[in-house]
Amino acid sequence: MKKILLGVVALIVLAAPALVGLVAEEHYNGLMSRLTALGLQVVHTDYRRGWFGSTAVTELQPALPATGARANSIETFSLRSRIIHGPLVMRSFALAEIVTELPQLSEISGSSDERAIHTLIHFNGAGRSDIDWPATDRVAADGSSRIRIGEIGGRLVFSAGGDEIDIWLEFSGGRITERDRILLEMGAFSLDSQTRPGASGVRLGSGSLRMERLTLRDRESAASVDMRGIEITGESREQQALVEAEANYRLEAIDLAGDSYGPGLLRLRVGRLAAPALARMQQALEALSRQPLSDMEMGMALLGVMSQTAAGVLSGDPLIAIAPLRIDTPEGVVEVEFSLQALDLKLADLANVSRLTNKLQGDLSLRLPEVLLQRALLEQSLRQLAATDGEQGAPPASEAPTAEVRAALEAQEEQRIALWLRQGLVERDGSSLTVVASLSSGLLSVNGKTIPLTIGR
Image: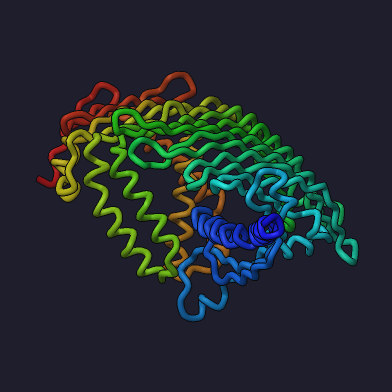
């Protein structure tokens, strides 16, 4: 009897890893299917299950419309995984451990082994993925270019159903140089985000992205853009079946064409989005991302999704607001505040401008240096002049206007601004121009002057 019992125990111990391997394969396939949320499509998976471990090779490609010749032009890349589901993993109270390598990284780092992603899956299907990649420095064979990639560390924690995901990522920075000239330089970078389902099933979350510095330099002209102190934060939430989301964009400074701009701030908010309709829209868009549709088919499918869910989204009286957009420039401060809300708007109202404007309520406040507006209007006129010359077959030399033509255009734009001042469409405040406007009940008010909107009845 004891021998029989020991035999049964031995059989269970030996068979358990194989049975666990079956479950591990299901979880592996589930992980791969979730990559569609990142815009990737699984082309093929070769999963070979063993007793204490398995191997898998998965080919992926961007989830882009692919038909005809374009289908052959979409590049694929592969993930090679070792799935361990034997006693060594069970000591960590986990179902399986997946070590995933990206062979393409070996072309940059010289070693794919130290660029592995380690994933631990628990018995309930939840788990985490960790990366801890050392810095690498690659030099071209002729020494003409160099790629420096700093240390990368991160963790992704996911729930059993995959609907709760936390991501943390840090990158110490990198640089691309060519013949001792910096073409791209990126400072320390960090990402932290959390995703959760709301009460209505809509995907909500919060997160932040910070980048110390980003420099781009053109190879030919040596023109450069240097941005410093980049920060993006955001949060979405659901309350009483309505979704609100807010994003904040901050920039310490940007150097462009010899001028320095900043600091800058943009705060964008959308609110009163009907959560059930928004959840249906998210689910439909995710389903579409998994289908290899052509451009035309994707466009028609997106139109169908919007038409089916737009009425539900509008039912909450949605609003959008920018409060504020502000950036310091060498000429002065640019400030914008804007809000627009739809009140009892129906899909049928979109086809009637009069009904549409009667159901929109908005406010606008704008301040900008007058010289910036003059410059923007002049650039617009120069582009229109170049386009007109191109249509008439004028020689390329005409694309660079003479001093007389440029002076005439500058005078024209000064007269245009003077006309707007006389009409009260803009007001002068020192060296800046201001506009205060509002829209309500089909009436547009600009700087205190009411303008009725009675078009398209």
